[in-house]
Image (cartoon, rainbow, N blue to C red):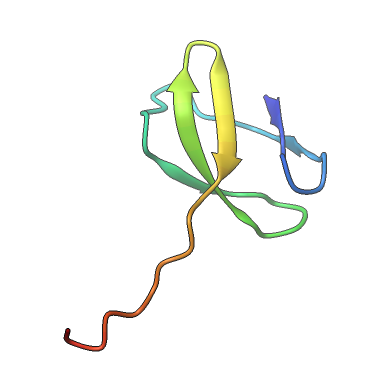
Length: 54
């Protein structure tokens, strides 16, 4: 279990966690990206920007 970087709520992680995985905070709904798995480190996931076909 780790703390959400946005709201401070506890986020439960599963056993087969992988770097780069995106997890939603159950309390505030923000998307969190797994930066490291041992120990687990989460950061706010980057926002996806539209490319408009360019």
